[in-house]
Length: 271
Image (cartoon, rainbow, N blue to C red; front, side, top):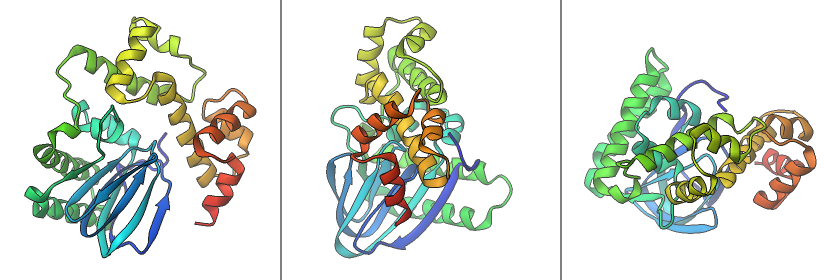
């Protein structure tokens, strides 16, 4: 659910001090140019150093732990709705949203580090200028970054050369579009004329999530955005995020986040 309307919602180049963590309902590219550390994503830690390019889903929270300073990096936040609509190649989107078994969210891009640095600088200029056709320019630059990343680490991307994989990408997008509605998994299978067992098996293999997990994570992520960026009550947020009642929402939220919605809101207010 977009709250901004632009593909690129933020672009920065800066030095990180100490440990940083944050939440945003956005895809993110993080390009480390100097320093080293570890980045925790969904319970897994990954070592990062110069010329490491990382990709985060809007469903993931991450924590940066600095080990060697200065730790300088670019980061770019991209609106999921806008990018899903306008970046039409499923294989390019896959590095942002699919987490199949064995997936690594980073790529060493030494081979094209200078070219990628120049592309991030172009994104910074687009952020500053806000001129006409900015989205078209940003989309072109993001595509070039993804292509160069693929040339360095093709295994980080899904290869959509089979009808089954393309079908999973379509169903994934359907969930992303309809998760705030009162839908069940059977609604998805009926819409795509497939069996429930086949759908669940192929969807998890392609994306790393069961269909229900993916739907619930989208709901929880949107709820977190409303908790952080609105004054809506927990009950209203539950309804807007696709949960049928407040208690069900609180239960799922606590299971995923380890805390209640109200406590999460207060924690984010202090950051």
